[in-house]
Image 1 (tube, rainbow, N blue to C red):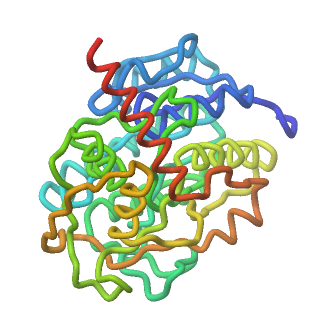
Image 2 (cartoon, rainbow, N blue to C red):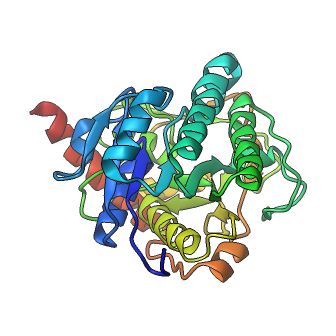
Length: 336
């Protein structure tokens, strides 16, 4: 493969929140793309017209083999999985099944089919409670919940597989993903989602009567949890750049944080929602949730040094404005 060649990509979970934005970014950049999604939390409408779509599960090895053959797949972008931290504490085996065991089937199918490139949607939850903030990729990985462990195990599988087979990989550890496509083509559509900005936008539009603030006694400036919020379209762009890097240098693999390197507390986010909407969402102060660290902020130095990635939407009010526009559009989609 020559440097710059656009190889066929299979996006798992491509009808979901982040996956659907990655599909748009790949299409825009000229990569041939296909999607597999079991539509458990994804939506068929989120996959653009003209993109080959397979409704099915990534633990279906026979289906994966057929897709790889039909599409000539040379890269996998793996988003499919479960992502709710408190649920992972309550139902750990669901997370080890969906995120770890199914990923093993997918990686095996890719090796069998000779797919040489693999990009994995990982998480800052692999760090657990970091010893320092901002957190760097080489810092200790010590998850405090099954969600983080389920992702870290998959990272290890990829590293070991890459050492044994002709496959390079990129692990992207997300911080808090938020916002929606600036053109309102897709966004966070899952009913009952737990993302703070999504929940706050629902409350601002009257879809919820309040926003829960889980934990007010953390060792942070205002006592509420601090997170590094990254716009989903910037995150999708990072995946496209990472794919180009893997194809351009098949001998190297990458592990990188995806964040802006700046944190906002829960109360700061809610203040921003109030500011953008010129309203006031009702806040309900509640105890901490299991598995939540006080602060999680990225050091993005490695991704900025490695990829030609320049964030376009690094602004909290912009993230909220795009999330709100999608929330309003979602009301009309669901009404149809």
